[in-house]
Image (cartoon, rainbow, N blue to C red; front, top):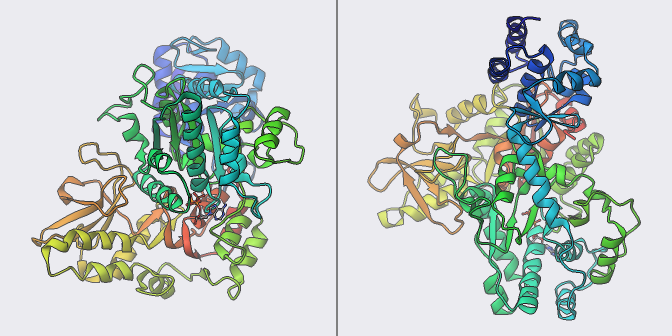
Length: 635
Ligand SMILES: Nc1ncnc2c1ncn2[C@@H]1O[C@H](COP(=O)(O)OP(=O)(O)OP(=O)(O)O)[C@@H](O)[C@H]1O
C-alpha cells in the first residue's frame, strides 16, 4: 500500500469510530519520520496509540496475531466482529500477519528499537510500547525490584513483643492484618490490598508503630514518613481514617506523635508544576523520606507511579494500600491490579513462609510460589465494616466473585437486606427516580437533604463558613453514579433532569445557588484538582460564589471561589463511577444504561457498590444489564 493509502485506511477506521484522530496523527508522524515505513509499522503505531487510549500501556502482538478484534476491543464488546460481516472484513486486514510477521516487519524499521535509544517505539519481546511508557515500565521494574530484596533476616526480640501486643489472637485466623505487617517489616516494598473495611488503615497504623520502634532500636533515629493519596478527597479520607484508627490503639505518646495524621495528594507530594508533566521531586531531587505510603493505590496510573518511584530515595520504603478489585485509573496502566495479580492465592515461597511462621505465627496452606511481588503482598479478607447481615458487603462479594445469579438473589432479598434497594425503571422520567433523588430524610437520603440545608443560611454572616461546610457535608451523603457520560442514563442526561427536579425555577441560568460542580482538570493557580467538588452558594454579601473544601482537609476549612474562574466546571449531581473512586457516601444509587458496552464491567459495578457506606440502590432500565456487567470482567 502507498503511504497515502495506509493513512486513508486508518482515516476510515477513525470514521468508523474504531480509532481516534490522535491515533491517525501518530501514524502520520511515524510516516514523516520514515517515509518508506512498511504498512505494518504504521498500523502498529496507530494501534499502540489506540491501546493507550483504552488504558493499555502496550500493544500485545501475540494477542493481535491471534485475534485482532479481541486484542483491540474493536469494534467494541457489544458487537463482536464475528457477528458483524463488515467489521470482520475490515479486521481481516490483519489476517496476513502472524506474530512472526509482525515481529519481522517491526524489527526492520528505524522507528523501533529493542531498548535504549531515541526511537519513538520500543519492542520488548512481543510487546510494542511508546518509548515514554516503556521508560515508565523500566522505572517501575527496577525501583520495585531493588526494594523487593529482603532488608533484614530477623526481627529483634523487642519487636516480636510489640507484635504480640498489637495482635492478640482474635477470631480472624490466619490473621491477614498481622501477616501484612510482618511482610512489610521484611523488605522496602509492600502492598496491602483489601476490600472496604478490611482494616487497611488499622493495619497501616500498627505497621507504622512497628517501623518507628524498629528504627529507634536499630538506628536510634526518627523516621521521615510521608503519607499520600491520588486525589484530595482520598487524601482527606485517609487522614480521617488514620485519626480514627489511632483512637482505638494504645501506643506510647512518642510513637503516636511520629505517625503522620495528614495525607497530601500525590501531585502535591511530588511538587507539581503548572503546565509541566515534570515534578519538583525526581531522582536528582528525591523526596525527603524514609517511608512513603500511598492509599487508594488502585487509582494510580503508570505515569504517576513511575514519577513517584523516580522521586523515591534508594533507601526509602514504599507501602501501597488499596483495593485491587476496583476500577483502575482512566489513564493508561492498571498498576495496582497488575502488581496484585495472584494476591488471593497467598503464593508465598518457602523463605516468605518461614518468615511468616516465625513472626506472624502463620502456617499457610501450601501454594505454588508466586511472583517476587506476591512475596511482599498481603490481601486482607475479612470486612470489619460489613458483617454477614450487610447487603452491601454480600452484594460486593458476589459481584467480585463474578456470581451474577447470587448477586441478583441478594438484590431481590429485600426483607433480608434493608440496606439494599433495586428499582427497575420504566423510562428516564420514572417518578420513582425523581422520588429517590429528591428524598430529604430517612436512611436513604437523596439530594433533598442538602437542598434543605442550603436553603437555610444562618442569620449571622460570621457563621457562613460553618454553614457552607455543612452544605458540602450534606451533599456528600448521597451520590448518583453512572456508567456512561452520554445518553438518557448517562451523566449528562441525568444532570439535566435532576436540575429540573431540584431547582425547577432556575430556568436556563448556568450558575444558581445549590449547583454542585466538579473540576475537570488540575488548576494549580486555584489549587483545585481534577475531580474536586464544590457547590455554588450566595455568600454573606449575597454574591454567588462556589465553596470548596480546602484541599486534603477534612477539618471543616473551606474556601470561596468566583464562578468566573471556573469556566469548565461540570454539574455534578450525577457522576461517573470512575470519578467517584476514593470517595464514599452514605447512600449510593448506581444507574446502569439500557445496553451493555465495553465500559460496563464487573470492576465498575463493584467500585460503584463499595462507594456506599450504609445504603445502596441499583437502578436499571433493563433487567439483564446488571447480570451482563458482572459477567464482563476487565481481567
Ligand atoms: N482486627 C480488627 N478487629 C476489629 N475491628 C477492626 C479490625 N480492623 C479494623 N477494624 C475496624 O473496621 C473498621 C474499618 O477499618 P479500617 O478503616 O482500618 O479499614 P479500611 O480497609 O482502611 O477501610 P476503607 O475501606 O475505608 O479504606 C474500623 O472501624 C476499624 O476500627
